[in-house]
Image 1 (cartoon, rainbow, N blue to C red):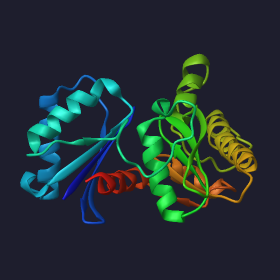
Image 2 (image 1 turned 90 degrees about the vertical axis):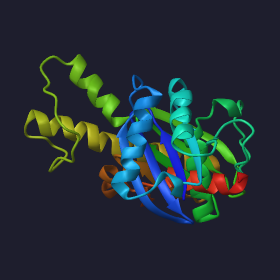
Image 3 (image 1 turned 45 degrees about the vertical axis):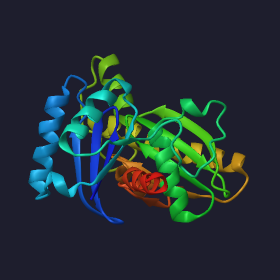
Image 4 (image 1 turned 90 degrees about the horizontal axis):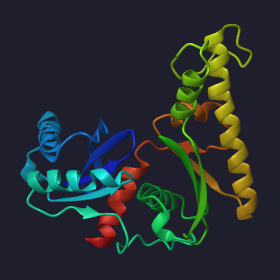
Length: 254
């Protein structure tokens, strides 16, 4: 089996692949205070929960946007399995030219998502990833990473609203019944959810115009399913896009 690990700012997502098939996935909180011992124990417990023996995991690959956790996670994985984990970074073969001014600045998760999206559509595509930040990544019809846009994530925006407006209560991010809210909670939800739909559709249309061609739009990340039903530009949602990209990059380097 292949273990893929995606370390994000809010959550860490792990997947186990048997060949090309994702057989198990896990989502845990990204905690910068955990030691490698704690991550080691947590990893073994997750495998036990899935009925998988550590000896069944023959290879692993990591993509991380939290540099302070890289060595911790690498050490935990190395201790759990009898192999060295592959890390997405400079020098690894992705099969995708990166046309950004400074390719080293582009987050590993954005390249991984782009590889998976292009492999799926075999043409121009935009990936919208609803994570701690909401990222928009543009891939040309030739499979080149062109760049993109970064916006504050929905939860970040909501937290800023709750923290800065003393009379507004904290509420969950959920779709309200209508855009015209008839109470404070629904008014806030309308502004956050429908406002974000407008942000996504507006940016996707502008990016598409600059790319100068028709594009497919794939969304991923925890809140993608909340936005997609009201969006006019998102074609599909794939919650495991990053994991699939890690699998593809591992195969290109193994």
